[in-house]
Image 1 (cartoon, rainbow, N blue to C red):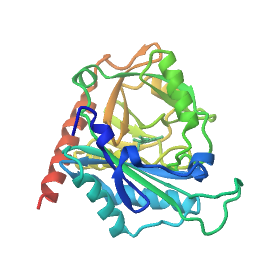
Image 2: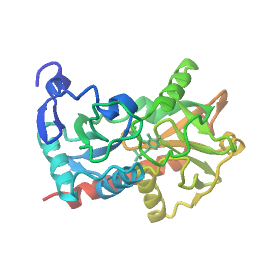
Image 3: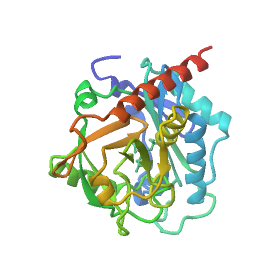
Image 4: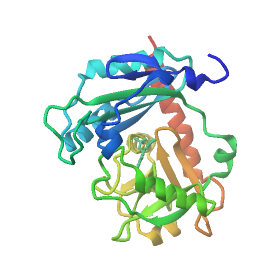
Length: 295
Ligand code: PDD
């Protein structure tokens, strides 16, 4: 790899592996014209796909929800993703994969039947979260959740998420935590939200207003295994503001502690004790997973 490793990345596009610089899609692709597609982001630790069955299931659910036929079998997905991993040197990676409804020469909101889905996937080096964040946490603001009513579909149409992320940046915050029109916390712009209150970990229940995060599922699994009290329950803005700890979770960041919310200090202003415990248990869980997968 030269000084610009990204330029030399190999990507997968519609059955072929090629340099990223050479990958091209049609301007008539419905993903380009309408944002008509779904995606997944899957972490890879020590060259092993992490929580692959859960990611694959969510991809199938997203495809089914928008009536795109799953273009590959489970075995074909696994082979494709493992080939991408093999083609790159990084021990820890994250894979981005996207399926759009395909190319339609005549632009029409109504999709033609029997289109061939466009399938794109590539991998990136997964960087560890910085020591500064682990020691100090991140900052977040609260914003009205301006998205649609099917946030459980992992749709590529992310304009509201981008707008809310920009609004957070404009207020010097790292991210935004979203509040529904009913007054409940849904999630972050690209993460799930947890609070800790009196030692109990609380996250909103799955449903149409948030993405069923795979990291969220792993955190729940780890909490149960280590007797950390855990509840799926609606969180109000008042609950959020009076929480002892706030976390945001995703496949690329695991669980991040939020130590400032709007103008308020969260807890002690440092990552909390329950987060510290979860961080250690989560790393143990990953290590056990890697060891189990080793040939
Ligand atoms: N996003 N909620 C939203 C809106 C997300 O976009 C994500 C992940 C999550 C967390 O899901 P998971 O734990 O399965 O990564 C929750 C990915 C990382 C992204 O868009 O890049």
